[in-house]
Length: 420
Image (cartoon, rainbow, N blue to C red; front, side, top):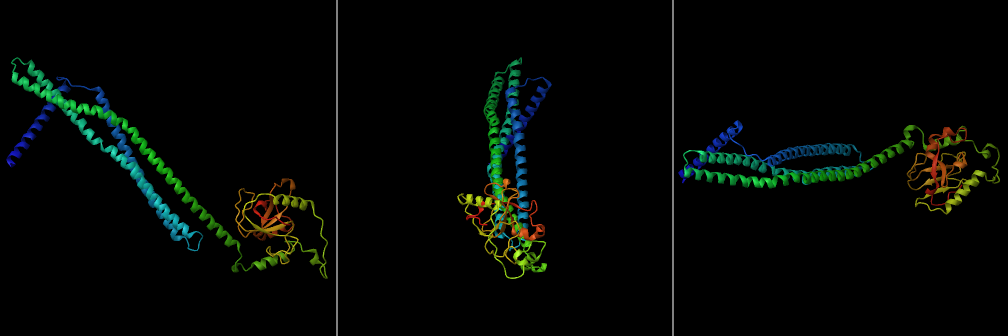
C-alpha cells in the first residue's frame, strides 16, 4: 500500500510540474506576441476593485486596532490618576466615599467602552476581512486556469493545422480543451457573481463600524461627563469647606470671636456709639421716630411679598426695634449704621448672577436700603453677609457701605414676612 501511495504522489507531483512548465511556456509566447491571450476587461476591473477594497479594509482594521490600543492606554492613565486622588484624599475631607466611588465607576466605564468596541466594531471588521484570502486565492486560480485554457486552445489549433492529421491526437486535444474550458468557466462564473456583491458590501461594513464607534463614544463621554461633573462638585465643596475654616477665628490668631466683637463695639471709628450711652445718668426712653420715606418704601415691598408665591426655603428674621441676639459682634446688640434688619438663612441659596449673594444655611445677612430707590427691582433688596462685614468693618468708618461691597438679596428666599 505504501508503494502505491508513493506512486500516486509521484505521479501527481510530475503532473503539477508539467502544468507549471506548460503555463510558463504559454506566458512567454503571449508576451512575445506569438500566442494570443484571452482578455476579460470587465473582470479585470472587478479585480482592481477587489484589490482596492482589500487595501482599504486592511488599513481600517489597522487604524481601528491602533485606536483601541490608545483607549486602553487612556484607561490605564485614567486609573492611575483616579487611584492617586483616592490615595491622597484625606478621610476627613468632604466626599471621601463619593471620590472612591467615582474612581471605581470610571474604571468600569473604561472597561465597558473597550469591550464594546471589540464586540461591535473590531470583531465585525475581522469577519469582513476573513473572506478576502479565499477569494484572492480563487482569483489566482482563475488566472492559472485561464492560461491552461489558452494553452489547450493553442495546442488543439496547432494539431488541426498540422499536415499529418492524427485523429486520436486531435480527439485527445479537443477533450483536454473542453476540460480546461469547463474548469475555467466554473471558477470565472462564480467570481463574476461574488466580486460585485463583495464590492457593494463595503458600504454596510463602513456604516456599521463607524456608527458603532460613534454611538459608543457618545454614550461613553456622556456617562463620563456625569462622573466628571460629580467630581467637580465635590472639589468645589471641598474648597468651600477650606475657605469656611479659614474665615473662622482660631486660637493661633490670638483673637477670639468675642474679642473681635468687643473691639467692634468699642471702636469709635468702626461704628458710632448710641446717644443714650454718651450721656450720664439713667437711660432715657426715646419716643418712636417717624418712619422715613425709605422705610415706607421698604414696608410697601414687604406687603407685596406677603401674597407672593415663594420657594420652600425658610430663613429666620430678627426685628431691629426689638432687642436682637448679639450675632454681629456688637456688645450692645445694635445693628451697624444703615442696616434695616438682619436675617438668618436656614437653607442654601445659589446665586444666579454676579451681583447676587450666594447663601449657605446659617449665614447672617444685613439688609440695607438701595442707594437709589428707583433702581430697586421688585422682590429684591440689598444685603451683605455679617461675616463679610466683620472682616471689613473698617470700611464703615464713615457710616456707609462702600460701592461694590453689597450685593442683591432675593426677598423670596424667606418664607415668612421680613420685619424691620
